[in-house]
Length: 319
Image (cartoon, rainbow, N blue to C red; front, side, top):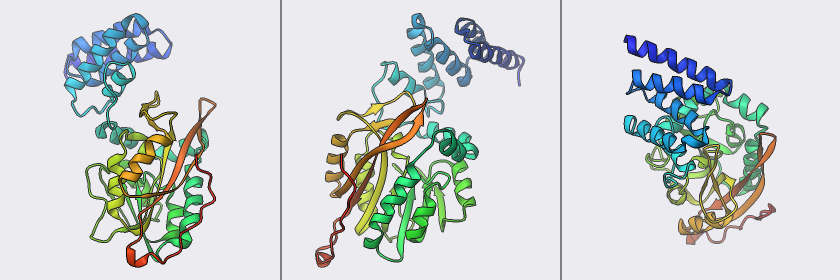
């Protein structure tokens, strides 16, 4: 490491320490020095931008610093574009940067389960388990099941009960290591659900579950289209999203998208899926406040030769 980089590291450490004490003006001064010493160091520029953002009079400077981050790292591992969007300086993107999501969950993988279950009281696995129990009588047996955005495998126990074969797909290799450790998957693989194939062979799935992964995608139209293509006739897509209040795609401070009921329904219909159920419920706690989500069950219509099959009855409330 060069002498300039070592000095920049010291300035960065000082700036972060000052920020931790709430002295953002002093933090900015130290971080500006770090950026001058190491002008190509994206982490230093991002830290500077974050602290400039905390000073109301420095908003335009914060935007410039985030833009510098993007020029240094076009893949946007730090999530600078998200911050620009929240500042009103950039349009809402269709998705969060894949590199940012991958890096975020690689860092969180080992502590993810404890954080979600113990600190945030995350209720997603219970919601998925209830949905699976409802559709279980209608599933083909043994069912082929895909855990889309499987993460550490939090919903794998409920899916395993329905699965003759259970596959996992996730963007983060760190999360997949934890998923493998559960011993519940027949296969896991790293992939981007918007870019990579969902099928590992020519055989479609009878159930695809997407728990707490669609929060990181704004435009869900291609997701529902891919689900329809990857499902067998009569197959089910169980999914969760954070609940929004209107037809707009909202990007929240927590860097997660929120989707409203009236925004979801046209996407589902366009994918030629039948929406069976859509229920609003408390998803987790954040800053001692409830965060609401939606859990949906959609079904790919059965083939005409199978139209005599009974239609499942669902008692869940729709929003």
